[in-house]
Length: 404
Image (cartoon, rainbow, N blue to C red; front, side, top):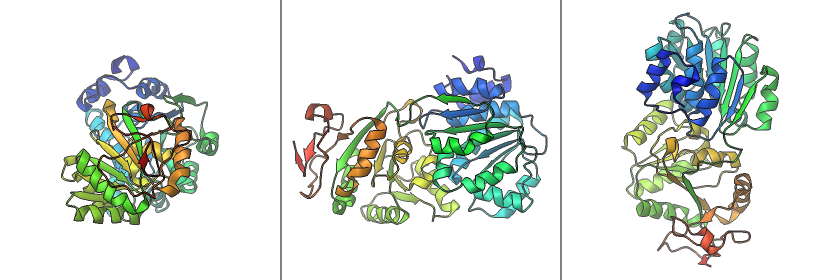
Protein backbone atom coordinates (compact mmCIF):
# COMPACT_ATOMS: atom_id res chain seq x y z
CA UNK A 1 0.00 0.00 0.00
CA UNK A 2 1.67 3.28 -1.08
CA UNK A 3 1.44 6.50 0.94
CA UNK A 4 -0.68 8.06 -1.82
CA UNK A 5 -3.49 5.62 -1.00
CA UNK A 6 -3.75 6.88 2.61
CA UNK A 7 -5.40 10.17 1.69
CA UNK A 8 -2.43 12.50 2.13
CA UNK A 9 -2.22 15.63 -0.03
CA UNK A 10 0.25 15.97 -2.93
CA UNK A 11 2.45 18.29 -0.82
CA UNK A 12 2.77 15.63 1.84
CA UNK A 13 3.55 12.96 -0.75
CA UNK A 14 6.38 15.18 -2.04
CA UNK A 15 7.69 15.56 1.51
CA UNK A 16 7.56 11.82 2.04
CA UNK A 17 9.70 11.26 -1.03
CA UNK A 18 12.24 13.74 0.35
CA UNK A 19 12.32 11.86 3.67
CA UNK A 20 13.12 8.69 1.76
CA UNK A 21 10.08 6.73 2.91
CA UNK A 22 8.94 4.11 0.42
CA UNK A 23 6.11 2.08 1.92
CA UNK A 24 4.15 3.01 5.05
CA UNK A 25 4.81 0.95 8.15
CA UNK A 26 1.90 -0.85 9.86
CA UNK A 27 1.38 1.92 12.42
CA UNK A 28 1.42 4.51 9.64
CA UNK A 29 -1.08 2.55 7.53
CA UNK A 30 -3.46 2.29 10.46
CA UNK A 31 -3.07 5.73 11.99
CA UNK A 32 -2.78 8.18 9.08
CA UNK A 33 -6.33 7.73 7.67
CA UNK A 34 -7.81 7.96 11.19
CA UNK A 35 -5.90 11.16 12.02
CA UNK A 36 -6.87 12.68 8.67
CA UNK A 37 -10.51 11.88 9.48
CA UNK A 38 -10.24 13.84 12.72
CA UNK A 39 -10.51 10.85 15.08
CA UNK A 40 -8.82 10.71 18.46
CA UNK A 41 -6.20 7.94 18.24
CA UNK A 42 -4.37 5.86 20.84
CA UNK A 43 -1.52 4.05 19.10
CA UNK A 44 0.94 1.50 20.46
CA UNK A 45 3.73 0.06 18.33
CA UNK A 46 7.29 -1.12 18.74
CA UNK A 47 10.07 1.43 18.78
CA UNK A 48 11.65 2.15 15.41
CA UNK A 49 8.42 1.51 13.48
CA UNK A 50 7.67 5.05 12.38
CA UNK A 51 5.34 6.38 15.08
CA UNK A 52 6.64 9.94 14.72
CA UNK A 53 5.70 10.09 11.05
CA UNK A 54 2.39 8.34 11.83
CA UNK A 55 1.14 11.43 13.62
CA UNK A 56 3.34 14.16 12.11
CA UNK A 57 2.35 13.62 8.46
CA UNK A 58 -1.45 13.72 8.87
CA UNK A 59 -1.23 16.43 11.56
CA UNK A 60 0.60 18.76 9.16
CA UNK A 61 -1.91 17.89 6.45
CA UNK A 62 -4.84 18.89 8.66
CA UNK A 63 -3.41 22.17 10.01
CA UNK A 64 -3.44 25.21 7.73
CA UNK A 65 -0.06 27.03 7.75
CA UNK A 66 0.46 30.70 8.44
CA UNK A 67 -2.27 31.32 11.01
CA UNK A 68 0.17 32.97 13.41
CA UNK A 69 -1.02 30.94 16.40
CA UNK A 70 -0.30 27.45 17.66
CA UNK A 71 -2.70 25.00 16.01
CA UNK A 72 -0.95 21.72 16.87
CA UNK A 73 0.82 20.94 20.14
CA UNK A 74 3.14 17.96 20.63
CA UNK A 75 4.18 17.21 24.21
CA UNK A 76 7.18 14.92 24.71
CA UNK A 77 8.89 13.70 27.90
CA UNK A 78 12.51 14.47 26.97
CA UNK A 79 14.46 17.08 25.09
CA UNK A 80 16.02 14.52 22.77
CA UNK A 81 12.66 13.10 21.75
CA UNK A 82 11.24 16.58 21.19
CA UNK A 83 14.16 17.41 18.93
CA UNK A 84 13.75 14.12 17.08
CA UNK A 85 10.11 15.01 16.35
CA UNK A 86 11.19 18.49 15.30
CA UNK A 87 13.60 17.06 12.72
CA UNK A 88 10.82 15.10 11.01
CA UNK A 89 8.30 17.94 11.24
CA UNK A 90 10.77 20.54 9.96
CA UNK A 91 11.63 18.47 6.87
CA UNK A 92 7.96 18.07 6.03
CA UNK A 93 7.28 21.74 6.76
CA UNK A 94 9.73 22.77 4.05
CA UNK A 95 7.15 21.45 1.58
CA UNK A 96 3.99 22.56 3.36
CA UNK A 97 5.02 26.01 4.60
CA UNK A 98 4.29 25.33 8.26
CA UNK A 99 6.36 26.99 10.97
CA UNK A 100 7.66 24.52 13.57
CA UNK A 101 9.00 25.66 16.94
CA UNK A 102 10.45 23.49 19.73
CA UNK A 103 10.77 24.59 23.37
CA UNK A 104 12.58 22.39 25.88
CA UNK A 105 14.14 22.67 29.31
CA UNK A 106 17.85 23.28 29.65
CA UNK A 107 17.85 26.07 27.06
CA UNK A 108 17.71 29.86 27.56
CA UNK A 109 14.24 31.36 27.59
CA UNK A 110 15.04 34.35 25.37
CA UNK A 111 15.56 32.58 22.02
CA UNK A 112 12.54 30.33 22.60
CA UNK A 113 10.30 33.27 23.46
CA UNK A 114 11.48 35.11 20.34
CA UNK A 115 10.57 32.12 18.17
CA UNK A 116 7.11 31.88 19.74
CA UNK A 117 6.47 35.58 19.22
CA UNK A 118 7.40 35.10 15.58
CA UNK A 119 4.48 32.69 15.21
CA UNK A 120 4.29 28.91 15.31
CA UNK A 121 1.86 26.57 13.59
CA UNK A 122 3.30 23.49 15.30
CA UNK A 123 4.72 23.67 18.83
CA UNK A 124 6.79 20.77 20.17
CA UNK A 125 7.59 20.98 23.87
CA UNK A 126 8.61 19.23 27.05
CA UNK A 127 6.00 19.60 29.82
CA UNK A 128 7.94 21.68 32.32
CA UNK A 129 9.22 24.29 29.88
CA UNK A 130 5.83 24.55 28.14
CA UNK A 131 4.06 25.17 31.43
CA UNK A 132 6.65 27.79 32.43
CA UNK A 133 6.23 29.65 29.14
CA UNK A 134 2.46 29.49 29.37
CA UNK A 135 2.39 30.86 32.91
CA UNK A 136 4.75 33.65 31.87
CA UNK A 137 2.31 34.57 29.11
CA UNK A 138 4.73 33.65 26.33
CA UNK A 139 2.87 30.59 24.99
CA UNK A 140 -0.72 31.02 23.83
CA UNK A 141 -2.45 27.64 23.58
CA UNK A 142 -6.00 28.92 23.12
CA UNK A 143 -6.07 28.00 19.42
CA UNK A 144 -4.78 24.41 19.66
CA UNK A 145 -6.76 22.07 17.41
CA UNK A 146 -4.57 18.95 17.68
CA UNK A 147 -2.81 17.66 20.78
CA UNK A 148 -0.20 14.88 20.61
CA UNK A 149 1.11 13.18 23.75
CA UNK A 150 4.16 11.25 22.61
CA UNK A 151 5.52 8.49 24.89
CA UNK A 152 2.73 9.23 27.35
CA UNK A 153 3.70 6.31 29.57
CA UNK A 154 7.18 7.74 30.03
CA UNK A 155 5.70 11.07 31.10
CA UNK A 156 3.73 9.23 33.77
CA UNK A 157 6.84 7.36 34.94
CA UNK A 158 8.85 10.58 35.12
CA UNK A 159 6.26 12.38 37.22
CA UNK A 160 5.14 14.83 34.54
CA UNK A 161 1.41 14.15 34.82
CA UNK A 162 0.63 17.05 37.20
CA UNK A 163 2.14 19.40 34.59
CA UNK A 164 0.38 17.58 31.75
CA UNK A 165 -2.97 17.87 33.52
CA UNK A 166 -2.48 21.62 33.89
CA UNK A 167 -1.63 21.86 30.21
CA UNK A 168 -4.74 19.85 29.27
CA UNK A 169 -6.96 22.18 31.31
CA UNK A 170 -5.62 25.17 29.38
CA UNK A 171 -6.48 23.75 25.94
CA UNK A 172 -9.75 24.10 24.02
CA UNK A 173 -12.10 21.23 24.83
CA UNK A 174 -12.95 20.76 21.15
CA UNK A 175 -9.67 19.35 19.90
CA UNK A 176 -8.23 16.17 18.42
CA UNK A 177 -6.16 14.04 20.81
CA UNK A 178 -3.43 11.66 19.69
CA UNK A 179 -1.49 9.38 22.05
CA UNK A 180 1.44 7.34 20.74
CA UNK A 181 3.94 5.11 22.51
CA UNK A 182 5.74 1.80 22.32
CA UNK A 183 3.89 0.72 25.46
CA UNK A 184 0.47 2.05 26.47
CA UNK A 185 -0.31 1.14 30.07
CA UNK A 186 -3.69 1.03 31.76
CA UNK A 187 -2.40 3.68 34.18
CA UNK A 188 -1.89 6.12 31.33
CA UNK A 189 -5.29 5.42 29.80
CA UNK A 190 -7.02 5.88 33.14
CA UNK A 191 -5.46 9.33 33.46
CA UNK A 192 -6.27 10.59 29.97
CA UNK A 193 -9.50 8.72 29.21
CA UNK A 194 -11.68 11.67 30.23
CA UNK A 195 -9.90 13.85 27.67
CA UNK A 196 -10.49 11.46 24.76
CA UNK A 197 -13.45 11.61 22.40
CA UNK A 198 -14.48 8.19 21.01
CA UNK A 199 -10.85 7.19 20.41
CA UNK A 200 -9.67 4.62 17.90
CA UNK A 201 -7.22 2.15 19.43
CA UNK A 202 -4.32 0.79 17.39
CA UNK A 203 -2.04 -1.92 18.74
CA UNK A 204 0.46 -3.06 16.16
CA UNK A 205 2.24 -5.38 18.57
CA UNK A 206 1.09 -6.69 21.96
CA UNK A 207 2.58 -5.20 25.11
CA UNK A 208 6.03 -6.67 25.69
CA UNK A 209 6.82 -7.26 22.01
CA UNK A 210 10.29 -6.40 20.74
CA UNK A 211 11.43 -6.13 17.14
CA UNK A 212 11.76 -9.43 15.32
CA UNK A 213 15.23 -8.48 14.03
CA UNK A 214 16.69 -8.00 17.53
CA UNK A 215 18.86 -10.92 18.69
CA UNK A 216 18.55 -10.86 22.50
CA UNK A 217 20.63 -12.61 25.14
CA UNK A 218 21.69 -12.30 28.76
CA UNK A 219 25.25 -12.42 30.06
CA UNK A 220 25.53 -13.63 33.68
CA UNK A 221 28.43 -11.90 35.48
CA UNK A 222 29.40 -10.76 38.96
CA UNK A 223 29.08 -7.03 39.71
CA UNK A 224 32.84 -6.76 40.15
CA UNK A 225 33.47 -7.95 36.58
CA UNK A 226 30.89 -5.90 34.71
CA UNK A 227 33.38 -3.24 33.61
CA UNK A 228 35.95 -5.80 32.43
CA UNK A 229 33.26 -7.76 30.60
CA UNK A 230 31.96 -4.64 28.84
CA UNK A 231 35.44 -3.70 27.60
CA UNK A 232 36.10 -7.29 26.46
CA UNK A 233 32.71 -7.52 24.75
CA UNK A 234 33.24 -4.30 22.80
CA UNK A 235 36.69 -5.43 21.69
CA UNK A 236 35.33 -8.83 20.67
CA UNK A 237 32.31 -7.59 18.73
CA UNK A 238 33.70 -4.27 17.46
CA UNK A 239 33.32 -0.77 18.87
CA UNK A 240 31.01 0.51 16.14
CA UNK A 241 27.76 2.12 17.30
CA UNK A 242 27.48 0.51 20.75
CA UNK A 243 24.80 1.96 23.02
CA UNK A 244 25.21 1.16 26.73
CA UNK A 245 22.43 1.69 29.28
CA UNK A 246 22.96 2.13 33.00
CA UNK A 247 20.43 2.53 35.79
CA UNK A 248 21.85 5.74 37.28
CA UNK A 249 23.73 8.86 36.23
CA UNK A 250 26.69 8.02 38.48
CA UNK A 251 26.99 4.57 36.92
CA UNK A 252 26.94 6.12 33.45
CA UNK A 253 29.77 8.49 34.36
CA UNK A 254 31.77 5.64 35.87
CA UNK A 255 31.35 3.49 32.75
CA UNK A 256 32.57 6.39 30.62
CA UNK A 257 35.60 6.93 32.86
CA UNK A 258 36.58 3.25 32.77
CA UNK A 259 36.13 2.85 29.00
CA UNK A 260 37.99 6.08 28.28
CA UNK A 261 41.00 4.62 30.09
CA UNK A 262 40.63 1.54 27.86
CA UNK A 263 41.04 3.77 24.81
CA UNK A 264 37.47 3.82 23.50
CA UNK A 265 35.91 6.89 21.92
CA UNK A 266 33.00 7.38 24.29
CA UNK A 267 30.48 9.94 25.53
CA UNK A 268 27.57 10.01 27.96
CA UNK A 269 23.97 11.27 28.03
CA UNK A 270 21.95 11.76 31.21
CA UNK A 271 19.89 14.38 33.00
CA UNK A 272 22.86 16.09 34.68
CA UNK A 273 24.48 16.89 31.34
CA UNK A 274 23.62 20.24 29.78
CA UNK A 275 21.49 20.30 26.67
CA UNK A 276 24.52 21.36 24.66
CA UNK A 277 26.53 18.39 25.96
CA UNK A 278 23.70 15.93 25.28
CA UNK A 279 23.12 17.23 21.77
CA UNK A 280 26.83 17.09 21.00
CA UNK A 281 27.12 13.54 22.33
CA UNK A 282 24.20 12.34 20.23
CA UNK A 283 25.39 14.07 17.07
CA UNK A 284 28.94 12.76 17.51
CA UNK A 285 27.54 9.25 17.99
CA UNK A 286 25.39 9.62 14.89
CA UNK A 287 28.36 10.92 12.87
CA UNK A 288 30.68 8.11 14.00
CA UNK A 289 32.98 10.40 15.99
CA UNK A 290 31.99 8.45 19.11
CA UNK A 291 31.91 4.64 19.09
CA UNK A 292 30.24 4.04 22.45
CA UNK A 293 27.42 6.11 23.93
CA UNK A 294 26.39 5.56 27.55
CA UNK A 295 22.89 6.66 28.55
CA UNK A 296 20.23 6.41 31.23
CA UNK A 297 16.56 5.58 30.64
CA UNK A 298 15.49 9.20 30.90
CA UNK A 299 17.00 9.92 27.47
CA UNK A 300 16.53 6.50 25.86
CA UNK A 301 13.52 7.34 23.73
CA UNK A 302 15.18 10.32 22.09
CA UNK A 303 17.97 8.22 20.58
CA UNK A 304 16.81 7.59 17.04
CA UNK A 305 19.80 6.35 15.03
CA UNK A 306 19.12 3.69 12.42
CA UNK A 307 22.45 1.82 12.47
CA UNK A 308 23.09 1.07 16.15
CA UNK A 309 24.50 -2.44 16.05
CA UNK A 310 24.59 -3.35 19.74
CA UNK A 311 22.60 -2.31 22.79
CA UNK A 312 24.18 -3.39 26.07
CA UNK A 313 22.19 -3.23 29.30
CA UNK A 314 25.02 -2.74 31.77
CA UNK A 315 22.38 -2.77 34.52
CA UNK A 316 19.06 -4.59 34.31
CA UNK A 317 16.22 -2.03 34.23
CA UNK A 318 13.86 -2.24 37.18
CA UNK A 319 10.87 -1.40 34.98
CA UNK A 320 10.29 -4.12 32.36
CA UNK A 321 8.87 -1.56 29.92
CA UNK A 322 12.21 0.23 30.01
CA UNK A 323 13.80 -2.94 28.66
CA UNK A 324 11.50 -2.76 25.62
CA UNK A 325 12.50 0.83 24.98
CA UNK A 326 16.20 0.20 25.52
CA UNK A 327 16.50 -2.72 23.14
CA UNK A 328 14.31 -0.88 20.63
CA UNK A 329 17.20 1.48 19.95
CA UNK A 330 18.73 -1.20 17.72
CA UNK A 331 17.24 -2.97 14.70
CA UNK A 332 15.39 0.18 13.69
CA UNK A 333 13.82 0.74 10.28
CA UNK A 334 13.92 -2.96 9.41
CA UNK A 335 17.60 -3.53 10.19
CA UNK A 336 19.01 -6.20 12.51
CA UNK A 337 20.80 -5.73 15.80
CA UNK A 338 21.87 -7.27 19.10
CA UNK A 339 20.69 -6.60 22.65
CA UNK A 340 22.86 -8.02 25.46
CA UNK A 341 21.98 -7.71 29.13
CA UNK A 342 24.49 -8.16 31.96
CA UNK A 343 22.92 -10.10 34.84
CA UNK A 344 24.47 -9.86 38.31
CA UNK A 345 23.32 -12.18 41.13
CA UNK A 346 20.99 -9.56 42.66
CA UNK A 347 19.34 -8.80 39.29
CA UNK A 348 17.57 -12.12 38.79
CA UNK A 349 14.20 -10.77 39.98
CA UNK A 350 13.98 -7.89 37.47
CA UNK A 351 15.17 -10.32 34.79
CA UNK A 352 12.25 -12.62 35.58
CA UNK A 353 9.85 -9.67 35.32
CA UNK A 354 11.25 -8.82 31.89
CA UNK A 355 10.90 -12.41 30.73
CA UNK A 356 7.35 -12.51 32.06
CA UNK A 357 6.55 -9.42 29.97
CA UNK A 358 8.26 -10.92 26.90
CA UNK A 359 6.60 -14.30 27.54
CA UNK A 360 9.88 -16.09 26.85
CA UNK A 361 13.19 -16.93 28.50
CA UNK A 362 16.13 -15.02 27.08
CA UNK A 363 19.09 -16.95 25.71
CA UNK A 364 22.36 -17.01 27.59
CA UNK A 365 25.58 -15.86 25.96
CA UNK A 366 29.02 -16.64 27.35
CA UNK A 367 31.81 -14.48 25.88
CA UNK A 368 34.50 -16.91 24.66
CA UNK A 369 37.76 -16.67 26.58
CA UNK A 370 36.52 -14.30 29.29
CA UNK A 371 37.72 -15.36 32.79
CA UNK A 372 34.39 -15.34 34.62
CA UNK A 373 34.48 -15.53 38.41
CA UNK A 374 32.89 -18.53 40.06
CA UNK A 375 30.59 -16.37 42.21
CA UNK A 376 28.37 -15.34 39.32
CA UNK A 377 24.92 -16.93 39.34
CA UNK A 378 23.44 -18.04 36.07
CA UNK A 379 19.67 -18.51 35.72
CA UNK A 380 18.95 -22.17 35.11
CA UNK A 381 15.54 -23.32 36.31
CA UNK A 382 13.04 -23.03 33.50
CA UNK A 383 15.71 -21.92 31.01
CA UNK A 384 15.89 -23.28 27.47
CA UNK A 385 17.89 -26.44 26.84
CA UNK A 386 21.46 -26.16 25.66
CA UNK A 387 20.42 -26.62 22.05
CA UNK A 388 17.62 -24.04 22.31
CA UNK A 389 19.91 -21.54 24.01
CA UNK A 390 22.51 -21.62 21.28
CA UNK A 391 22.17 -18.82 18.76
CA UNK A 392 24.26 -16.51 16.63
CA UNK A 393 26.03 -15.62 19.87
CA UNK A 394 27.37 -19.16 20.22
CA UNK A 395 26.43 -19.47 23.90
CA UNK A 396 24.98 -22.24 26.06
CA UNK A 397 23.14 -22.65 29.31
CA UNK A 398 25.29 -22.25 32.41
CA UNK A 399 25.07 -22.33 36.19
CA UNK A 400 27.44 -20.86 38.80
CA UNK A 401 29.94 -19.93 36.14
CA UNK A 402 30.09 -23.33 34.47
CA UNK A 403 28.65 -24.23 31.11
CA UNK A 404 26.07 -27.02 31.29
